[in-house]
Length: 65
Image 1 (tube, rainbow, N blue to C red):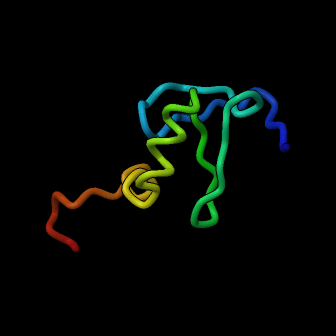
Image 2 (spheres, rainbow, N blue to C red):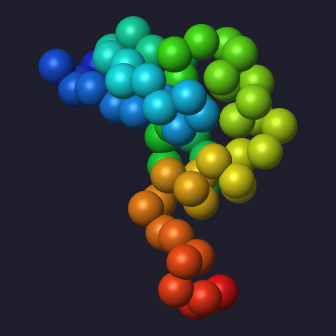
């Protein structure tokens, strides 16, 4: 387990800010995702690409894809 002193991350499922030192985390697509609870992790696990893509800051509003 890696410790990030004072590093806050966003739970990509619910949007809650979590402490990277104590949050549940998972690697996906070369990135680390953090979760406030096992429920949020389960939702992510069911549709990881949906949440990973949404958290990238990329939106489809411009008709790019």
